[in-house]
Image: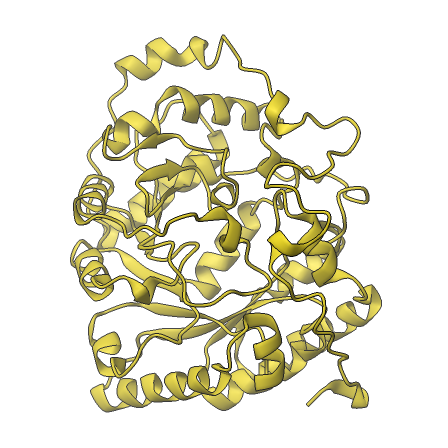
Length: 424
């Protein structure tokens, strides 16, 4: 299926667990580029968010409107205004919640640093997900994170409860632990499945994911679609997540054809994003051709439009240089000037109960803990010192953490584009 008769060369040797790499010496032991502050030398700010402390103390976060009908539209409108204003202290809850049901996973993928981030896997406690959903009443909930959500024994209950509270629900999944629950998956009410497939054939999938499960994923998608048709429902929609790297980028166009064949509604092409993991990223992005990738993206976009498959390739066209730059080494990285809106409209609740401001910071061990949901209400965390300090720094145009320094933030255009085309 490769274009122009090209055959991808597979190399087994680099696909070793990160701890076995000779140059690896710990999560924060990578060489720091000139001008960057090493993580163990970041100074404490004694005046953190003091200017807004009194305002935060006086401000009460308003009870969230139920995310239905006109009330939902009103919340979206207020969220858009908040993104434009970016105040330090907020009177409204975030629209979006990433609820990490578990950080356990059954795979050991080359693109994932979970193998050294997680010492002992956690399951999100019932009281934690109940309380934050009831308090926030988010319009959208993603019930996945670092782990595989369908390993959580109560995942269908979590989805059903989130739906009962009016939220649109989606999750990213490797789709290998559905077993015979295809009908249950359709009937639980989840709006979207984001299937991380990363390959268009079993051989490439095994190299990237370390398991011969490609055909199982394809069969699961077909079975879910069969039950959707039988039950007369259009949900859940199915979207491919495709993390581009040296072993699969020649399959960009093939992926569109696979999506067409399986009745997949959308494709999200991802760039590799590592924090403190430069050795592994170098292995997975070396030998990639910039010109070839751009050509493949253009053809993929053309075919997806022809077939009516939604993608994020408009973002790749617009910001290709930024995407490509993000996959380069830190020595070659050039910071972008995009604004970040995550601490104003979204939040992350980890399986361990820690609240973090975005889905990038959980990929470090020592950044972004805003507060623990077992010790504070979310409203207390939302306008607490750490959240306010982060908002102030971002509003000044700073990149205050290691995660922020190399991040490609979703700007206003991207947020609206992704929500309108690729999310429920």
